[in-house]
Amino acid sequence: MDHATDSTAIGSVTTPPSKPKRVSPLVPVLAVVLVIVVVGAAFVLTNGFHPNRASSADDLIPALSYYSLPPEEYNDVAFVAHSTSVINGTFTNTLGVIVYLLTPPQIKILNHNGTVVGYNWTSGLIADLTVYGLDKTVQPGEWNLVFLNPNTANINTTTVGFYTAITLSPA
Image 1 (cartoon, rainbow, N blue to C red):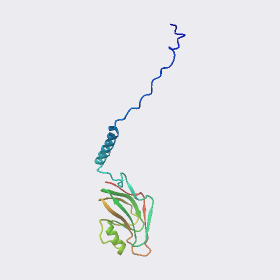
Image 2 (image 1 turned 30 degrees about the horizontal axis):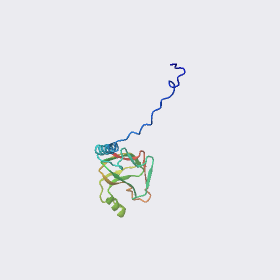
Image 3 (image 1 turned 90 degrees about the horizontal axis):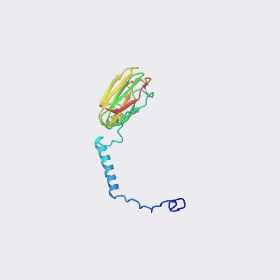
Image 4 (image 1 turned 90 degrees about the vertical axis):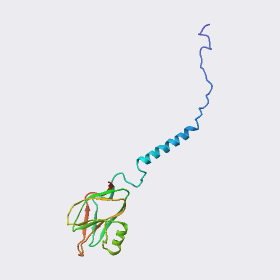
């Protein structure tokens, strides 16, 4: 037989189309179970999910901002500590200021009658132009950080300037 003239020796081989492979019904079930196990493990390892809990510092008062406080007036920042946290920052004032850490019921009394009846913490009077490195631990809960001008003379407006941000970060 002469291979040069044999047409059957040259040509393409065709195979019949193959059927698609069936996926076992267990594969999607196993995938769902795996996702549930991974999410459950993450929940246990992180002591539960806390979407509002910051993993780093939250700014309560931005750096390079200031408050101008007339006599016997205050500014406050309300915040929630989701775990034991630390308030940090540096500020200065022109004519004296008192810093308080108050709960919502305590701030309501301050709003109502203008005096501080009870408080969880106070800095005491921070004298004129004193730079104060704030470093205060707070327990979980709702809080108000209050900057009060204790001066009673009508002309004694004080300015509180923040060199760094006042931050709240997990302890």
